[in-house]
Length: 482
Image (cartoon, rainbow, N blue to C red; front, side, top):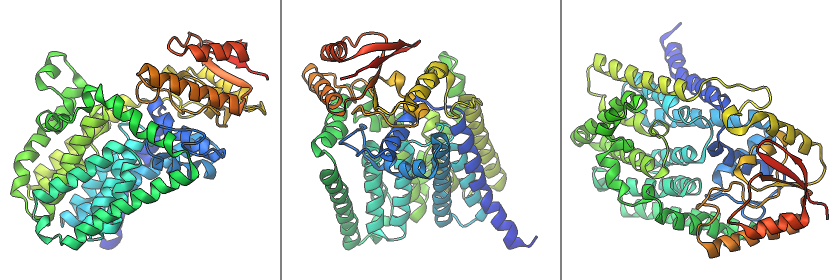
């Protein structure tokens, strides 16, 4: 084998690893967090329009990009696995491209790809809008480095419309990186203006499409108004988290960690120590290296603080920071740190995603989705020509087993961010749900067994229009003939 072929083979390995790990973790289980994007894609596959026939509390990009996978693969589980593999492979490729710009040694580029393949998506599990949004930040930063400001602006806009907080963090960290690097000296006013105008233009384009095809008032309320109000009462959404993210990376308190014997946090803590080391070492870097490490270090930490997820799920752009910082280190030191970070990642994947393959639906995690009754009801509804609706998160897996979309307006029912906390807003939300049910006239409605204590009109509506068809372990099937 000649040297060029050998180098190509080595460069291919991170992509293969990214595909294998993403496929494995996608097969190992599907939680409520993962379901939302796939539910939106299922709705679009069956002809529903976002923010008119259904909505989610964030922008449309994540489920719009997942939609073609549901058209390409009739099995929703295969569609989700394929999308997960694609997302992880793309992130790996983009990070390797950035590493090639920041460091000269091919071995470090491959190491960056390997760490990204392990840490970007697999610890969380499968395709998700948070990680898709960060992929667009990676792409946007790559275009910015290549002086293609218009495309960079478009990528940052797509990040925002995948997940609002990630998009905002990305733009904020880009300007922080410009402030603390020499890149600001070479950035011309016209290039900066092109980037800003591109942001504005693509925001207007996406909002115009929503205005034309959907209910813009519903979009604005469910994507901005309700989540913003919800954030006011959530400590983890406090703007001061920017400071906390720097003082206590990934929200891990070192003393509390040892006091509570948190083995997951203890095993992860070497990565936190590396972050502290990065704060000291990065100021000795120059040019594109400092620009890149400031952006990816800060955007990773700030995203982790606002997304309220496990520390292992949000390594995001840290692999590039590791590669850049170790560029001048001895090879033995590089190998030791790369091996340690990779091993920690593989252990986290194994601990969080034990093999849970099911012949019923490969993405089902038995301890959450109550396979037997969910599958039975889904199979029953798949054979019914009439529409159906679900009214609670507990039934959210049923449409996948039925392989058809329900007609209820909200895809998920998260308290606060989807179901408003304020009594007046909750009543308006409830009336809108009931109006949709009256308009769509589903024959079947699946509800939870307990009462909707805060939704009196909902209970009255169900009692008036529906009768119980069958009771299952965790929910009730209602027959709502006219």
